[in-house]
Length: 631
Image 1 (cartoon, one colour):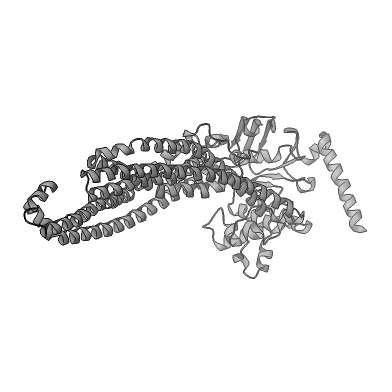
Image 2 (tube, rainbow, N blue to C red; image 1 turned 90 degrees about the vertical axis):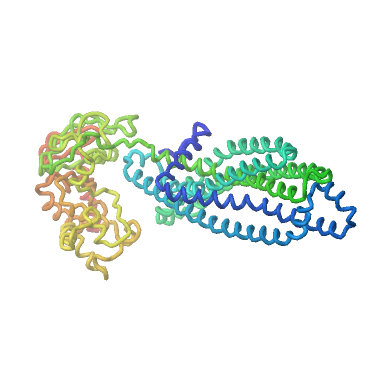
């Protein structure tokens, strides 16, 4: 079994998958456009503020200068106006209109702040709604895909890994689509617009920044390429930790029964330690990149302050223009700081997107053919024709050239040692797996030529490992037929010898079975599973050692019920004991994947040494058990 998915072959694969995930926004185009429209207005309101700040500062400085000139000697004023480059009308406007300019600019700043707040709220709400909807789509697609994937995929992958991809990986992708993507758009918009305004405002000061920006960009590109595979390793280690947790919770009784709590705790701690160390490694990388960026920002800011101060002293730059330049400079370095968080989220989302699409892109090994037809109601003739089967398409065959025919209404019993291929045969009938070679047919139709739904809906199955779902007993019996009436549910329960013990519960058929049926005994769970299969009224019935977990009395009750119910149905029964299948119409004796013998009980006793040996050994066991019970 594969312990963990392989690392990506290239660092760009995660970002390619991320781009593919972003296209899911097209499903909610209107909401996404509304979010980005609100972002555009919010950023525009933010970018307008420095212009108003310049107006306020210039109004104050010009007003103070004009008031001082008003009290200066008249002979001095023409020279002062000439030095300042003002006209007499400008002097009067600066002297009398300073307060009006302050009030108007202040009101505009307030209006822009309100607008920015309103549209920022709209942006946040729309982006959250959109990201949650995209996450909803991913979770549903993942669940549907996992449900459709063949048994061979689940044989190779652990449950905990699949769970973490449908939960944590989707959440990391959602956070980037809902926050990181908007943050990226905001950063680019702020950066490009602020740089353009700075270039138009003061070319000389802008030249001070030019060496800083490429260096900062290169730093982020390098750290982005380093971070993405690190986050992939974080998700892989998180999957391993989740797998350990899931396995231990599922097998908590076994852990406690064998007193393995300390060992399992140590196993969990080791995995948690690996995850923590990987997280620390990522944190170490990002704890280095931010100081580097802030250092570059501070160097650029220091250069602007120095050369800007020289321009103010030289009279080529006003205080208002210098303050506006400083504010726009902050809008240049703010996106650079945001890039750190963006790359953080983008790297995590890229790794998660790759892991999500690994599942969504998995080719199912058992699918309907393009021209598959619905299987009409069957009579129940099941035939294996030279069937060979290998798990995962390689290795030694589990079944080798298996050929037999079960006529409609016959009961076919499968006997053999563990690993002889009994379960594999019954798994090929409903196409849980496909034969590697040969054909499996029902009423002459190759099972690969009909739709899976029409095939499996006519087959009732009771597996050896009984699985019940949280909910009431009645819901578990009606799992395959949710529309079944209460009378039909009760009839199926009676046929499976389950009705009496169900009525012993206070709530009867409304009794909750607990997670995985933990409130029921093994025999009770098996009888519920038998009732679930029988409610389908299938033409083909598969019983995989269905009486293995019941006592002798219950086994007799179930066998009596099954004897009646299997009449008219083609039934396949796996059993460990000959006594339970000696009346079968056809007994297949399997040995290392081959049919060593087949026929009825009497025929096999005469012609099959293996069958006779099994029968004799079980008679000896029964005699010893009877002798022991007599003592």
